[in-house]
Image 1 (cartoon, protein in one colour):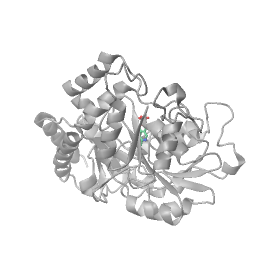
Image 2 (cartoon, protein in one colour; image 1 turned 180 degrees about the vertical axis):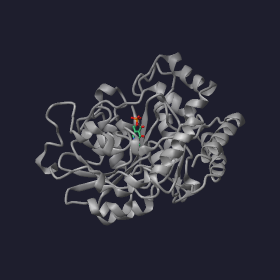
Image 3 (cartoon, rainbow, N blue to C red; image 1 turned 90 degrees about the vertical axis):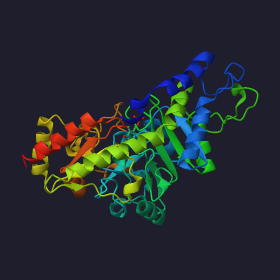
Image 4 (cartoon, helix red, strand yellow; image 1 turned 120 degrees about the vertical axis):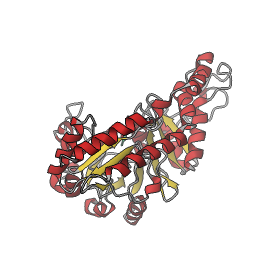
Length: 399
Ligand SMILES: Cc1ncc(COP(=O)(O)O)c(C=O)c1O
């Protein structure tokens, strides 16, 4: 649960600043806002933390993906390679801009397999979205290398991996753009909210214009006099979200340290389980430690262990069964059940050959069928930790 566990007086103070002025809009009202610019300050602090030139606050992690895809000029007729293991929003964002998501396999990191990217490339492939699932990095160096070779754009979906890094560089900064989520479950939270980052001025401006109806935000007199070049929509973050984000960002390093400490304790204890293995980490130092993923040699045994852990009161997730994070289980997506009856972009004849079958992702079928995920909290007091270890010990006896 992370940031939501630490809501306290710091968040209250930041939010009270905004409530004191009554100005919730991030733009305008210069006289009334008492010099509080919470979203702007959050963006600046976030960009500094990530070590990039630009950050743009938006309404959600889903919006961040969509706005980034628009900035990258991805649209109808384009194909975007995405991993089979991700939250639906990654695929939905691609569909939202009229492009078609192409499903690729994962590797032992449980993230997008760089070696599968070339198999999925067609003349219409425009971009790839590596997703750093459950706090841990993909082999992002290799992914960027393959993308460069094939002239593909890279948008890193870092919704689940704020604070994580690969060889000292923050995730989200390897590709052309990176996106983040601050929904209630994420490493830091603004209730709902998201951020996209880039060091490319053109991409930033396109994103900034699109997320606010095309406003160029250049007028020094009035928002009503802003210029515009492209059409857009409204994905603006508000000042209450910015206020929460400012307070939460200051706690991020504390969140990461606590999660890493707690994860190390449980991971160490799990070694009592015969045959136990762990998710492959291309850079263990870079893990944000929101989850612990462990595996057994085969699916049947893994299911027995999961049931035994449940009996002991310990819940884990087997993502092969999960409804929201594994493409073969999205029956409405597979049925092309778009919200309107036109079924675009699936019905576009150019996308006829795009299919989503379990046979295309043998590693995901294997790895996600014998890996269990356990959430790691910031607050795991000794009594809770002892209960977890006892549950593991008892469940291991049933293997
Ligand atoms: C990988 C991934 N991408 C995108 C999102 C969407 O973020 P939000 O809930 O802020 O829209 C999520 C949310 O869970 C996610 O896990």
